[in-house]
Image 1 (cartoon, rainbow, N blue to C red):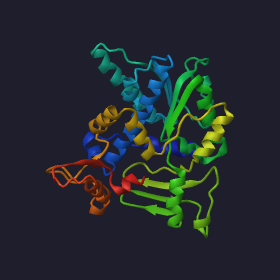
Image 2 (cartoon, one colour):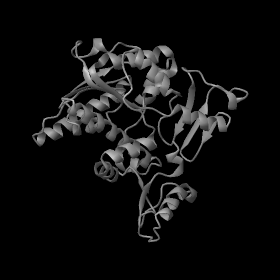
Image 3 (cartoon, helix red, strand yellow):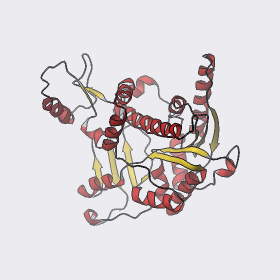
Image 4 (spheres, rainbow, N blue to C red):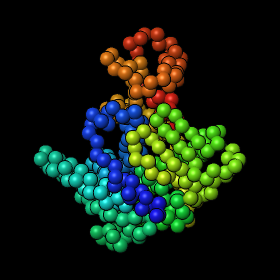
Length: 333
């Protein structure tokens, strides 16, 4: 079975969960933080496009899943979007989500963006022939937390990246987020191919005799990845320099790259008020110490030693003073 077929089965099987169930999840704040990061990234490039004269962007959302970024696109005031995913059931949820959003805004006499939905495997299929207009090009292509699945083989990685580059107009942007392959390998080298904490377990499939010196292949480096209650689908290491090299072969050039800690600093420096307001609004960080009548997500107090240290550094002895944080286990993901 191909990696895309496995991904299709896994993500079609993900059930919809209610707000209360998501709130009780051990990765509630991690999910929200990832959403904050996507929101800031999308907003940054929507702003770039506006500054360059594209007031209402056209977007291709690769591997869109259930449409978790739909509201971000609405906030970005885009004009139209093509959403595509290999998982048909997930894409149907995305379509339903868009319809609900469109109807809700229509009641308030707001005009939503136009959307088209394509069930396709971007690692195997040429997407252009499936567009509503085969001559169309996009201002922006986005692929969030999914591109690394394509690195199961050189052919599949080349195909999805070609689809991204082919979709863009001259001067358009391709944005996304992927796991940090180098950081993952640092953890795995220290623990003979395994890494585990309170919410996450990673194991490298190739069990070499001396894993500390093992160098994984550029393509097909498979991981078994378990994250709390999230569907556990085989994943693959995607080295960012390799990704850049392939895209350069397709005529693209790197605008910027940040790991998450550096990205936080970048977005705070660029627009601190908006960044912090959004963090608070979507609860991207856990309040420490816990609010009255509330409990911290992590059971082990040592998970918050870094937060305690930060409060001490600021000489804050007032027990009513709070800060936002992720527990150590989640911050290391």
